[in-house]
Image (cartoon, helix red, strand yellow):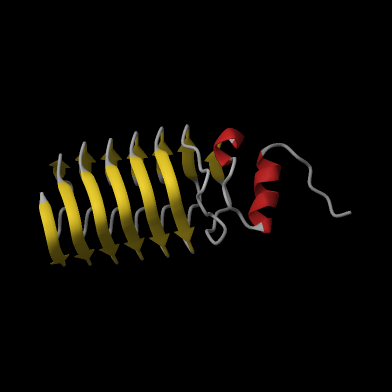
Length: 166
């Protein structure tokens, strides 16, 4: 367990971190590219200006955690429980959320282009300021999700609706 620490300019690339638990930790300018984390927890953690490209998080518990200006293209969250997370000005292109539980997640000014969301309900999540041209998600997972008007039109089109100006 790592508790109450500030870690800067550290390179964890290609590491298998395993069952690690981080509480009250700030990571700044760290590289977590292609890191594997399983069966651990992140509680009150801040990732600031970090790289998480290809990071794999499986059966993790994440609570009160912020990702600020993080480059996390191809990140995967699998069978994880997430509560009160903020993705602020992040890159999540080609990322994935599989069979996870999301509660009160905000994607603020985050690039979510080509993100896949599968069996992961977005109820209570806010996508309204995120950007994407294409996103893969079932309509059942969108119920209760906050989106902008423009995104609502995109989702309607993805569902096969023909949107016209009246």
